Length: 103
Image (cartoon, rainbow, N blue to C red; front, side, top):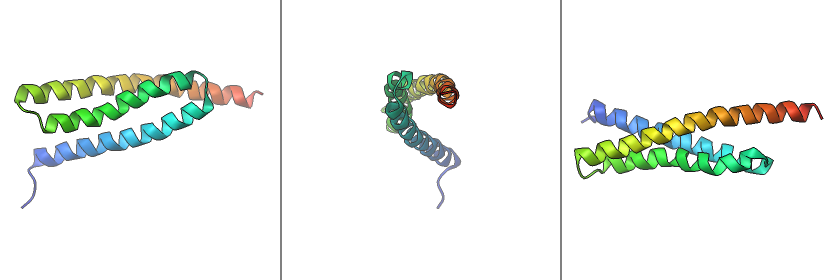
């Protein structure tokens, strides 16, 4: 017997959130080593990147439809923040690379 389509989709989303969290851990580790402003932003990125999957897992075990919606809403807010931080971090990395090549 196969899982319903919506259940399989939900697992795919949780798997993607986990992969994003793993990649974020690697990025944050690198940013901490490099120092500078990345050292300040890395902890916030790490918190929001890892909370997306955590909230999706919490939503999966939600006690009610309202609880499910609440947890998914929190995950959505964190995903938006991660996107914004990713854009900022991308600019930091580009600037750092440009500046290091000029030295």
